[in-house]
Image (cartoon, rainbow, N blue to C red):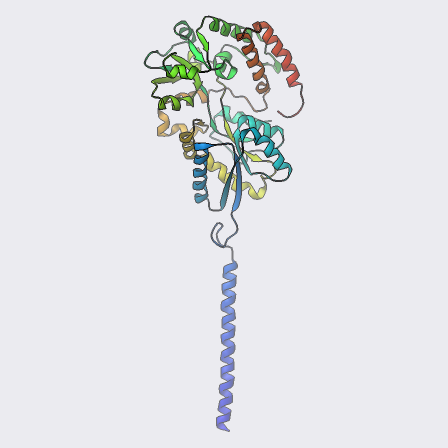
Length: 408
């Protein structure tokens, strides 16, 4: 009996121990499960999925490659964000974007030229800029402002400068001196090229809210252009830059971005802001400008933080420096011009010109009037109209253009 009773006790003890083991295993399993289900750091294996930011852009070649490289660096620095790049041809950019948004699709961010961004805004495809850009030049930022709201962030830009050959030409002290010696070559006699001289001498497109294409100052400037052209001191030549590089003309007006090409061709060149020839008067119109904009349907509260991080990174002077090295456009971020490499070459002059550039807001009526003035100037120089008739016709056409309702 004793042996039997002892066996029973042993059996009960074994059962109790087995139960403890099972409970212990259950506890361990519970700890492991709850430990794995607790929220780890975003972007770490097993954590919440990173935010995906799609960027549609119009860059090609070396610029597209540079953007790809910079995006990879941004993603490494911000593992909580995945950035996808998609190239869209310039000619189809606005149409594709509009169609995508109409279907509830499309990117979070657009990188495109000023003209395309203006078109996207007119289609209602843009949201106000997600990031607050405090480092942009006033003129570049204003170009993307509609109704006092910034709808894009200026990224890369250009500005016209006066170039002179340091081996055959001296630095002119004034506009009169420039045109009394050897004259100058330009590729196109348009407002963008001659804006600093035109508005520095009183030219204007609007006066107190009224169209003023046939303003007396505009007429005087156009007559001056015609005189310069007829005496061959203003030479309009599509190959003006080539002529300058070959030493056939000592002065040329071209974008600041041209300096890179001239240096590569070993051309001895110097440059200066156009306003310097008018005693500091006159504001140049910015040239080609790329902006960073947000999609109207994809800029949601849930995505706002990720979009802001990507935009802030793209606007850093390091990224803009890399894009400038790959292409030709200059950074639109003022902080870039404090970097050591920006203290030489074309950058000091470009910095001055951009700081003083014409501040023209995106919804400014002048953007619609500039093409009409360009056409008037072209007709006069081609001998198709007198200055008075050309400007009066432009004035009449302007009334029709601005009477069209809708967003700019």
